[in-house]
Length: 333
Image 1 (tube, rainbow, N blue to C red):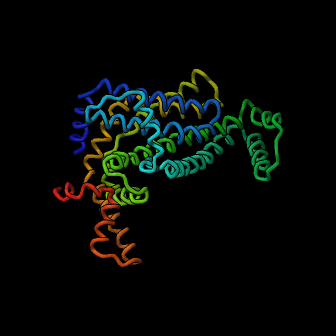
Image 2: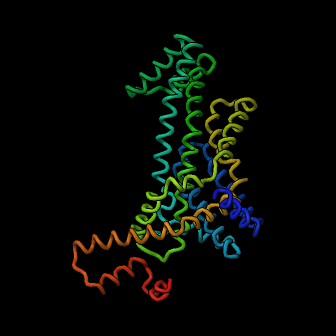
Image 3: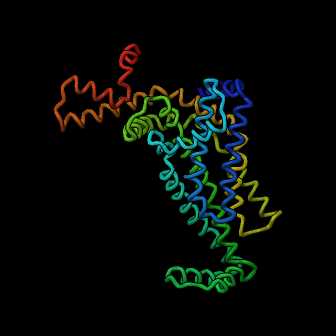
């Protein structure tokens, strides 16, 4: 089945390669530009990712969806898709906050492990000099004692940037696993975009419940069909090596690793969007079953609190489906 999915995706890509390449490269460049903001200040990503990167990624998904039905994409249409991300029907498509918190957990877990390993390595290399510097920094931090800028700089740069190098190394090591996790969670959740686009507008809570039901039942099976993130990992290694051996700005190593995780993805994105739509098609009926299960759950809850006649129940179900004017068509299906 994996091979057939890739084959179907590749055939879709070949049907309109120039448009897929244009959308994929444009999306990749935009995501790269957002990530480069980390050179100015990593904290900027907390704002830029949910307000710029995710809406642009959403617009690219929608643009490629319309390519499937042979509709040409203009910049004005792209702008509408971008704003569509903030509509209630598509709110939560990427589960951005949950994805971020999960990836943050991976980051801290990796940093703790890497910190222990590098502590032992630096202790063996620098001895008590490193231990005393580390203890000084830890004591000041734990006791909330403020350093002056000059004091902190002197401590970090002492003994050939010993402490700065230690902090940078564990930060850089913590990025790959957490970033791959974030990209995976965002990508996995984006399947719901195609479901949300294929159903009549309904309450956000119903859509969320429908998607949740589908993921809960078929998550493990879906994961077997998922695109690999090898390019992202290779990009991290390549950009990290570029900084380490050529640019030699040890303080920028984590940022180079972060940017590298996105840089090479643009070469995969043209095929990625075709592949995502193919994966959705495989599970389309499962999403519809999840929608039906959500409707029945809501109906049971309402029925338990309010006595409804069969006619009232039928009207309420039609309203939940958002298909009041499609009853006959749905009956034929």
